[in-house]
Amino acid sequence: MRPKHWDAWRLIRAQRGGSPAPVGADEQSLQRAIEWLKRAQDAAGNGGVAWGYVARSPARYGWPTGWWAAYPETTGYIVETMLRYARLAGDGDSRERALRMAEWELTIQLPDGGFQGGVLGSTPVASSTFVTGQVVFGLLAAFREDGAERWVNAARRAGDFLLACLDGDGRFIRGHSHFCRAGAKAYEVRTGWALALLGQATGEAQYSDAALRIGEYALSRQQPNGWFAENDLDFNDKPLTHTIGYVLEGLWESGVILQRSSLQEAVLRTLDRIRPLVGDRGRLAGRWTQDWKPAAAWSCLTGSCQIALTYLRAHRECPRPEYAASADRLLGFVTATQASSGNTAALIGGIQGSYPFDGEYCQYGFPNWATKFYADAVMESLSQTGTVPADAGA
Image (cartoon, rainbow, N blue to C red; front, side):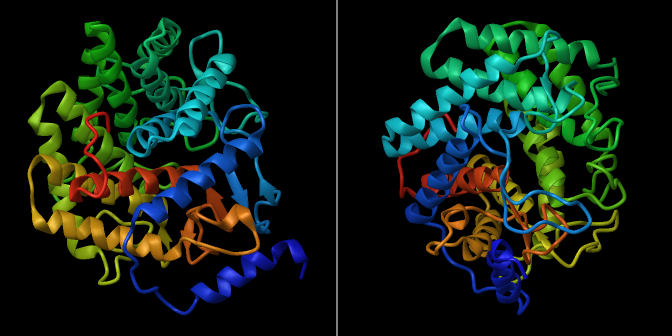
């Protein structure tokens, strides 16, 4: 046993005994998550946010331990999270950090307007449609924050790259990531949401029209029982709750911006089907087959946070107590896994990839996007309960 792996072994032993009792998410758990994201940015050392922290190297991957390099994809949408927290908490440091993240993205935009897949330093260096869409969120958030034209100009270049990769049916036929299985993805509707925002910000219809095509393609992948085909990084027969969360987020918010109720109705179908699958303590399996049978014994905590956030967004627009209750259960489970103290600062406040810690998704790791989506969901929950001021910029 190597000492650098002891943190991982402690977590594995503690989590193999079953599900923890739910813990209510509050302002302290939110602050811990934000502080963890700040540490991840500091660890990257260049303005971007580190991929995350790996406490033990999985034998089958040979991953390095410790903090990883900056991750363009998720740094992009973490900008939004930090700016929302800055408004809610009056935290000028979060605002400054968010704008520094966006500035870093400008320095790595590729000549075709896109942004690379993988962490900084990964090869090949090639634009990815999904990554580019997620960076657009950050660029537009920075534009809304200070109005500087450089943000929207970069977002336009990114949007033009996306349009060049899109076919008439709303599928991305080029620009697939080299770090997952190639092919059309239903969850690219989250990229469509970014294009809808770009159309809204610029008043340019080609972006909004493309967003609608992407949304309708994702809609065509939904089965009558609410499950989505072509909706995983690598295993379309058993998608992650993470990618299920992506498709739900993208459809819901595209529906809001484009005023297409059919997109939101599709989300409600899936939410209604998922609700009885959430365990009494808020635990949700990490993968699901097309007949909604669990395909993993572990939970993907990122997906749990995203689905909780979607329940809350739906509840905000069409209030249903069962949606708020489902969100509370999911967040209660994830909050119970968040460390509030310890000897290793990298573990405090972060959200791990899988529960238990040795589950398949980001095994032994704390990916930054898990903590980002946790913070988003907690801010939305606290806003709806009146614990923090409502924020129209969510």
